[in-house]
Image (cartoon, rainbow, N blue to C red; front, side, top):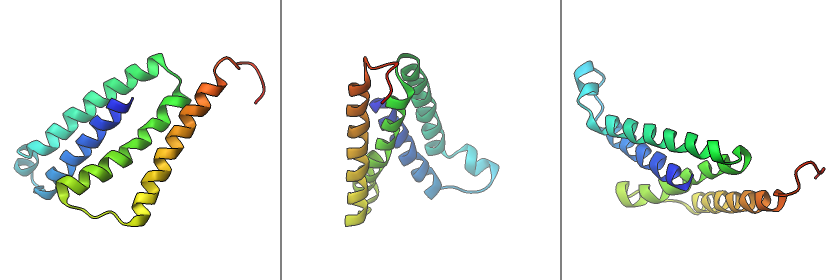
Length: 117
């Protein structure tokens, strides 16, 4: 699932690169290879996600997708030279901690199926 988030975040970077060069005509869209690379990466990530869902618990796996916000934030710094404010860093930290708590919580409920929590 973590690889899925890395793939989807990379796809978002390609979408941004494509959007910067986007011309709203059929030739402009069809020749914008950044958009197509982003779509291919996103499709690959979707297959990875479906595969992960097949073998795992949705309630434990799906929150990991929130780490995409972390990857995109970090990649944006390096690729687009975007600055992240302290509030954005606090948001990223909150997401990171939330994913950790969900992961810990899913480990503690294993073996407790059928009991009221």
